[in-house]
Amino acid sequence: MPDKKTASFMRSLCLGEIEEEIILPFPEPTAQERETLAAIAATLKAMLGPREKDFRAWDVAGEFPPSFIGELKDAGLFGLVVPEGHGGLGLGTAAYSRVVQELARYDGSVAVTVGAHSSIGMRGLLLFGTDEQRARFLPRLATGELVAAFCLTEPGAGSDAAGIRTTAVRDGDDWILNGEKLWITNGGFAEFFTVFAKTSLEGRGHITAFIVTRDLKGVSSGPHEDKMGIRASSTTTVTFEDVRVPATNVLGEVGKGFKVAMKILNAGRTGLGGGSVGGMKRLIEFASRHARERSQFGRPIASFETIRQKLGQMALDCYAAESVVNLVAGLVDRGYEELAVESAISKVLASEALWRTADEALQIAGGAGYMRELPYERALRDSRINRIFEGTNEILRLFIALAAVNDVVDELKDLPHSMKGVLADPVKGFGLLSDYAKRRASLAAGLPREKGRFTLVAGPLAEEAKAFEQQARELALAADRLLRRHGKKVVEAQLACRALADAMIDLFALAAILSRVSTRVEDHGEAAAAPDRAMLTAFTAQARRRIRRALASVDAPDEGGTLALGDRVLETARYAWE
Ligand SMILES: Cc1cc2nc3c(=O)[nH]c(=O)nc-3n(C[C@H](O)[C@H](O)[C@H](O)COP(=O)(O)OP(=O)(O)OC[C@H]3O[C@@H](n4cnc5c(N)ncnc54)[C@H](O)[C@@H]3O)c2cc1C
Image 1 (cartoon, protein in one colour):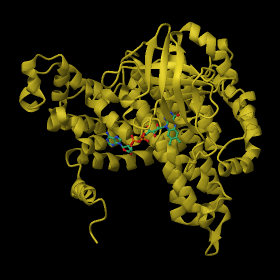
Image 2 (spheres, helix red, strand yellow):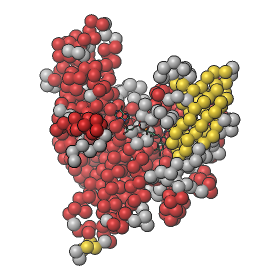
Image 3 (cartoon, rainbow, N blue to C red):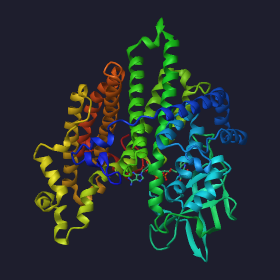
């Protein structure tokens, strides 16, 4: 069995190894979890179902009334992930992600408000808090007496989170905190902040995470931002002016705050993914209803191929996102710890699938979709943020690709100086490398690889499994070429990395769907699994084309020379072809 502390399906896949025990069987909720989720879904339906008009009004107003936040608290929605012992519902990652999915069926701002509290606002306390800190804060976080917010971004530090300028200077038993955080979700009314500050004034880094509560003198928030979407959710600056934070509020180790931030964001991504899936399901319902009811040219527009295909694609996108999000969340619940690549993939895939779905749903609704009276335009605006926050999709793609080649870089760190030229001349130096290189070399030589095969996939899916194995091998070879071509400079080869990431995203989705369908075949038989099988067939066909193209781009990423065109734009700061 794979080591749950270190095993990563995708990192192994980039070495041509299929660690099928990680993803098979597909994680499904237990009967008891299903029951709890059905009860929560029914409560949410009764509570949020009749509020569509309110959601529209609050979107225009740009905020929720405090009474509505009170209703969310009363419904227990701020205690979803707090352990039962501390007064919460104690939901696991998969169950929590499914609840966010349900919330997003009604309103994006509600999902973001609850998500910012549970997914990132208090996640640091759950992951790194001491027993004393957990006992002090979790019961009040569970009831919503304290709503939580996550404070990392600053005016000068967005994607480059290590560049933050907020400082914390030790003074006796306290730390004195100074700085301003930007675009903080729940910032207007949160009482509990997970704040990241520099605890050494030298250079970048040396960041520490702190728990800061609003009752501490010097904490204040700015006005609500006037946003494009998720308008009713609170987004504000949060300012810390000589705030005296007790040393007992340090989260994790002093100086290890960057790791804390990254772990929180990794863990939070299944919440965002769940929200994206819920948003898609709602849009599919709206769009299919509209397509059936709207007639043009004497027949329902649902009878036209173009519309039918759009709806099919939306469903396929949703199925892929749901498979990936549920797989990652299930792996967290099974105790796997090394899921940074997989959770980044789930965020990118789900947020982009939601964006396409929102766009196509609006298109199916035509001019009516553009009117504020119907939910499409709000859904489109609300969905856009998912590609930006919790790590932009560009940065996450780079991360996904670089993580794939990270192992070899790690190994190089320990090599004697004389061998460090290996990356500069990888072909010559390859033989000198360790086990890692040998595994790559055997891959390149086309040697049969014991670990490059599926053995646990249900028999009837043998063809699909074989196709996956072939593509996995091509992925590993492309990762190898990427490294050989760029050596240490691979970090700068952004377009090639992005192409590798695109292939990895599709392959992980394919693996998740294969696992889901295989488990369905095993548990319910081929006939019952036929609708799922149709999804696998469709995704396999589409992904094959995309993967082939992406892997070709790893070798020639700047198709047609758009980089130079971009340089020309930057040089002139305008469209220079008039
Ligand atoms: C509504 C909303 C809510 C938010 N909530 C929170 C919150 O609760 N807590 C919090 O801490 N933050 C929050 N944020 C901030 C959010 O996480 C950041 O906006 C995000 O991390 C991106 O940072 P940035 O906006 O500064 O963009 P930048 O980092 O300036 O990026 C601009 C563009 O450049 C690209 N880019 C940047 N660096 C590179 C690179 N090295 N290579 C290639 N491309 C690059 C990016 O992908 C992006 O397209 C929120 C933001 C919004 C809009």
